[in-house]
Image (cartoon, rainbow over all chains, first blue to last red; front, side, top):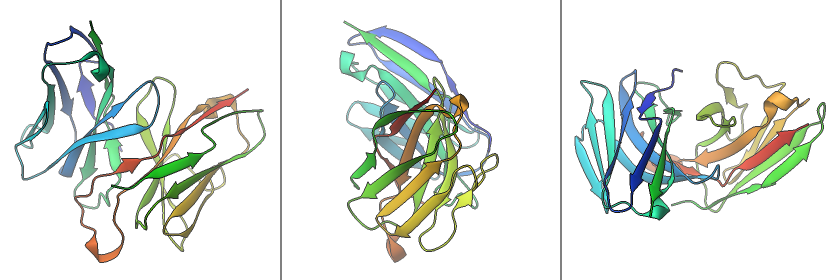
Length: 113
Length: 120
């Protein structure tokens, strides 16, 4: 399966600023999920948005989904140094995804004090 | 959410040898998956571990190289066989958190902490 694209590949911001990451994918989907990975460790699930949803919030996270453009964005507001990590989007393809995830290329976020 | 552990957390192996990675979940789950993350790269799905039957492999991955076992609903192993330096990666298992009739196609996936493998 083809990986999705994320941009930017790397993002450096100051603490307190907002960070926006974008994800594009190639197929129809059941859902799209965002994950965080700290320093090559396991992935932490952040948020899942279903194909019939357009926007979802969780704490300082806001995710949008535009299925007509096959794209999603993750906004982290009031960023903190602890948000420094790699962020990946992942899609569950429709039909037949079977909950297998196709991951994007990832965005490396660095939040500086 | 499911709690997932993996063993070993890391290993350094010689080329030509094999390593078996274990994935243990604290609850019964239907779907278990194995992913590979090569250095500086994103995750790529290796296979879906099916309970009581052979694993389903993705394009580019074969059973002889990555044999998988799934003896029950809480446990799976992935073996990396006849290793070469190109197999140096992080290997992660994941589950979708629910077993049986409660599953839909809208499940959050939970990942283990990963096994960091270096092949010399």
